[in-house]
Each structure stands twice: as structure tokens, then as C-alpha cells.
Image 1: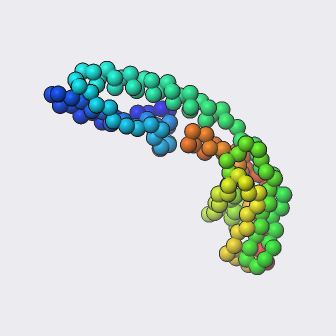
Image 2: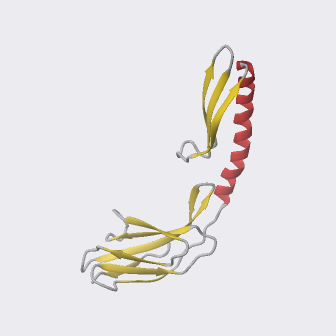
Image 3: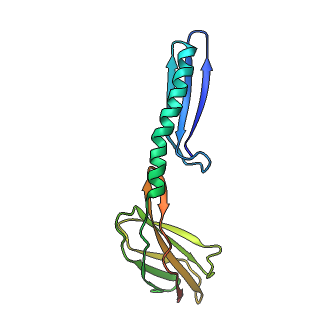
Length: 165
């Protein structure tokens, strides 16, 4: 839901309004637009404040709809192998139209206490170091797309398990 925070300051000769427009205030998505408006009369400030909120809401509801409609392709893992001691190398197929990838790995098959690594869109592999030897790790990958400052995630790939050397 689009939200607008504003702080109004009135004096006999002028009025000022500090404002921030949010894409989704409840989820804490950061401000899209902010600034200060200064007016000669407090009456003009009240009218413009109402207009600003309604115009901003209409503008950002379009952005919010775009974010919700965005679909991100599912990523497929090609391999997850322990190439060296205490390391694992994950390779996945490149997905088109994404901003990056998120790799999730854990010793638990239900991914409790999982760790996450974010990788740029140009990379299709990741080397993870510092793992425990002779332990089985589960790995999965998903793509994300950044739309109007918000990350929209695709579905996770099928989890692969690998025993660490």
C-alpha cells in the first residue's frame, strides 16, 4: 500500500511540509520521493498537501502494480560439488532478465539456520569456503529482479546435496 509521511510546520507568514512517499510503508520499503515544500500562506499548504498525497498515491500505485506483476524465471542448478577441502562450488544455468541470484546453503535438509549469498547477474557459479568436512550440505538457488527498488524473487531451484571433502 502506498504511504506518505509528512510533517507540517505553520507560522503566521509561511508554511512548510516535509514529505516522504513510500511504495509500501508497512513492509518498510524505502522512500521513493522526498523533499520540502514552502508556501507563502498556510491555507495554500493545506490544499497542496492534499493534492500531493493523492497524486503521489496514484503514481506509486502504478509502480506497486508493476512490482506485483513481475515474474522471475526459476533457476536450474547444473552442479554442486566439493572441489577442495572445506569448499563447495555451485554452478547454475543463467536466467534472462534478472538482476542477480541468491544462493542458500545449509547442513540441514529443511534449510533451518541456512546462510545466504547474493551474486550479481553476470555470474553463474559460486565457491563457498569454510564449510565443515565430511558433512552433507544442501544448496538451492533463486533469481531476483529489482523493480522500483524492491527485489522480486523467483522460485527456488531443486535442492542438491553434496558431501564436503
